[in-house]
Image (cartoon, each protein chain N blue to C red):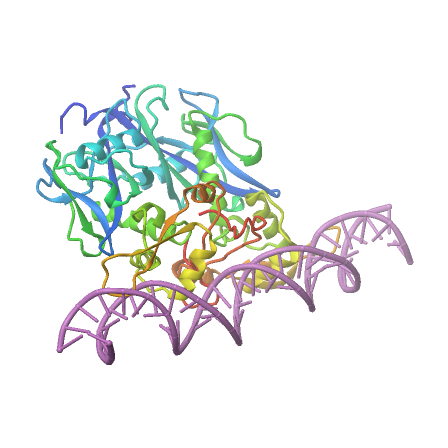
Length: 245
Length: 245
DNA sequence: CCGAATTAGTGTATTTCTTACACTACCTAC
DNA sequence: GTAGGTAGTGTAAGAAATACACTAATTCGG
């Protein structure tokens, strides 16, 4: 294993793009870096992969070490390997993404040196991030946008009980567009993934909305069966437009 | 750049999954390996990434070196990094994929030691491949299956002139299913991507079919505009099934 | 030359999905 | 009790998906 030019001093890292939804806004989890390079800058929670560690295991470990989040389902998105993307050597990074309910997890004020703190940031107002993390985040956001039309993404992002309007706002936030209320409800309800809890909101200064939850069993069947969920509202028919793969 | 545990002896490789269509069959381009490990076995055309080389550039270079193919549009699919996937050390590989017209390219009997020869193999009858290449190929094939319903993939796989039946067979080969002739034609023609050449097949022992070609300009617009192409024929409505993202 | 074999090519009716669109119901706060 | 605010509801028209079977054009063999 010693052919120079094949094995050389290099490293792999993983970076996690964790989306959440809170206050009507799509959020992404960032850390304030505790280590050079880019110390004190915000960046994605990521770190080096160890020699005896799978990529996915590494992503999970790193996420836990930097933010305290554990037991998060991560999915590989894309690998970034520009020659100069890391200032101290050749490093390629594999990006993972996840959707979580912000209410389910507590961010630990990290004790490691890697991250001074972890915090949710609005996706819509991000300043520049460490490394090429803006590019990485963008790739994951694009994936999320594609996904949201084909999978009932709210299941993963919303708290256990939610209103239809909240669900609609989630979709609108991700798609960066408005949806028709009646059509949205018709479609969502016709999918038969929601359970009407027969409860209503409390403490709001207007007519309280009914609360729903997702039907976990049906959601599983949905994913397993490759069923779909075509939340159209197409970009006004340029002949026969739907949304890009 | 010398923290042990971060930078360690390791390597990146790229592997290319090149699909073609020929003799009514979906093909993938493999090389007979000229180098250990797995010498003399069939595997994907791949090799190490050099220290000063982007991943995509490496994929292109390697493809050319092993098969003679040049100027192929490659797209990143997924990265494989199991700890034991390579017998001589820690190696992660980034998989790239492409669709090409087999008639456009000549496979050079490779002069390098990397590959003894390159050859098209039917996707449907593959024996075991070197490394985890079966898994890599499968991931790319799944991507192709998803793509074919959303993009006019025939453009990339068929020779310049083709019949509608050939186009339909291509789709059937990729999707591993049968399509209705009349509905297929209706749909394809309504997309307005094909040009009727007003020519017919020659040398066939039956009524000759008309020949078509793709309209390159409209195809570009198609890709750019994110338009779609929903080749449904759904798996008989499990309520509202379409095909998985 | 004619019949058999083979693939090409075509249309319609039914059902389902998508879209556009506006008013009433219910609750709180003052 | 009324003003302000969000929740909740239905329908009609157009577009797309599906299911389905016969005729047309050519070659080949006798």
